[in-house]
Length: 274
Length: 312
Image 1 (cartoon, each protein chain N blue to C red):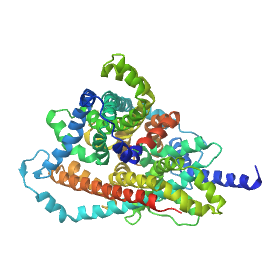
Image 2: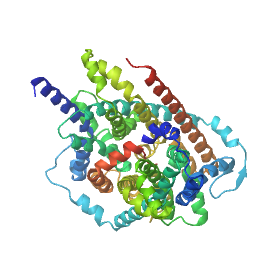
Image 3: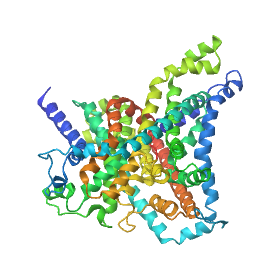
């Protein structure tokens, strides 16, 4: 490597570092806030690495019994909404791709354009009328608005690229449509299903607006619970930051573990819920 | 997004019908459950919202058909009109800034770097993090007395700012958060475009003595233009719809300085429970999102056309 190209790549690396630094510094600061006692969090100039770590900020969050409830609420809402979306969306993606019904995809696209709040007025009235408020059902159904389009969108794209030859061979061997899907198309589509699953989980877990409107005291999901902490504990930054980290940690871990699938899914689908 | 780019292609390559129409109809059972679900949780709310918007209707109150009265009321609602202005300013900034930084990041991450995967992974993290959790930490960072941002500014000789606590700076401050979070999405989309560029044009340009800027201007830019348009469309839709960050940090305040249409819609429908009027806002808002998206899609067709015509 000659000196000039060495300097070039050094410059590029430096530029990359500058671009990444807002993300890195933000998360480091978030961790710092969550590990400091209030004295340190209220200090000016700010303390970056405290002398004593306030682990109690974390244990405090876990010890509150309500947190366990909200965590389980989040798990149920995201789990059921994603599971149902896969159950419905994977066959639908297959059907749409094989029927070449690209027009059907437009509905999914418009669904993505629609502001989440505008689904909420009719759904809110409907759930009230059905007497479902106070259970997790309204939130699960509302989350389908996010998860179903993501799964369909990604699976259409995936099934369009899988080879037809194997499926045709299975048809010649006497398999019916369902058997072809179940034993030929589905196993090949596993990577696509993984991508759809991960993205649906992330966007459902992160969703806030449906919970704000539809959740009662006992049915809050984690993002809503954390937001409510803000109104009650305006000035205790340590516990707030700790709670914020705990809420977003599952998603960040998933992002790190499945970075390749997420990048593939987002560049292929560029979907975002809400 | 890929589907957006390839849409023309897929619609053109309609397959030859094999063994008649029966072949296609046999796929219906796969789609029916999704049609039922999409119909009831997505299409039904659309239709019901339009119907509700023609009523005077508050939760728990009586329901009266009033035709287009809610829409007439919107036209003279100064708070609504102000919220349109806020939305457009917010959207404009929240499209332009991520577009600029995202393209820059894509150009850098497209070159060969040591630890490129790790750096890209870190860069993508803000986009995946829970928006409300992120918003809480930004709220602390914006604090005028104790916030870390004013401390950092003091190093480069800029005095303390009021950030989200002043009507003058609230929207740019919120856009800062939005940009921080969504620049990675633009980066990923543009990176997809850069990966598709063949190397031959660069080689011949180098032989012809084109410098780095000329190579960017006359080869890279036209080649990634369709991808930039896709990024603009997606960013526009998402910025128009932005809710979590604004609600969690300012709730539309101070006063109504950062109240976008979405925030106003929330107040009307779920704080005042005026669901009839709220539905009218939702309909107009939806129309605005669709209109802007169609406009962009139209512009995208033009960039495609320019691709074929232009270039050196």
